[in-house]
Length: 366
Image (cartoon, rainbow, N blue to C red):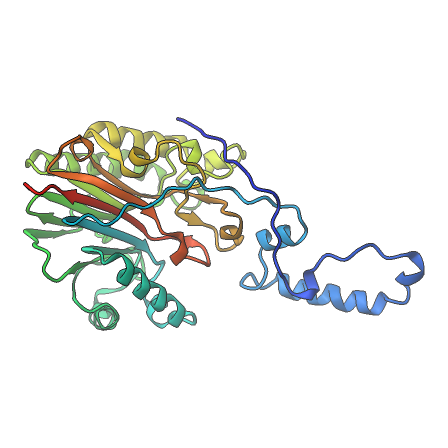
């Protein structure tokens, strides 16, 4: 595994409520006089700190001047190809919350802006968490927000309010076939596979190893071999394959902001077994990590930040979302080739997952 140490910028400033602003030390003569005010301030600070939406660990560290932001290597975007395929994925952590939650207006506006700016041929939304009985209403709301798309739903039937992937395919895009939940028979709505005339695209929400790594053995011993076999079968059809989505793994040291922390190897997505399994996936195709193919030495390029800690403020994140493609798509002169890959953090100002994008370009002869 390669590691490019994250470069750090000087501590940054952050405007916070007066209750948590740092104050200069007081002289002894002033302490007794200001005791009631100090107690009031301390109480207010405790109340604010208890509300993570107002003040987080990272925000308090910034206010105290004790935090450095992890610098992100510039990865400039390429202009959209004249002909090609644009695939966008976003783990929204519950579609009902996006459409109807307390911050729904802001989140829907961000989703609309994303689609307007990128005009994806396929928009994959993972972890929608819907039951089948709620799909019709959610689809109506989603397509009302994003007209001009057709929805294909993979729904978890093994457990209510869990997992799920939906792919919206833009009108006019030629689709040969669609397969739902075709990897492993656990009925968790983990994949939507779309066959196009010149490639296969598989949108995935890979099982998380979970709290206390309870699903780690299943992930490594069952899911990973099944996914490798599935992708190899698709590739054997003669068309290249793109796997994109939340793959729930941080492959390289550079994909983990605090890789040297003792707890990291015991954390879901960061265990040595999961990271090695991603390497085995790449070798099995062979496949390429599209982002690393274009930006092999980039650091600070993450796709997920803890909302509990407010880590997006300091870019303390993980790269958990990927596009993995047949190596033939990275070959010079290919009729269909890797064109761009990006993490769109501007659409996730409050942290959690950012949308990820992979774009393929078709040559004039294709």
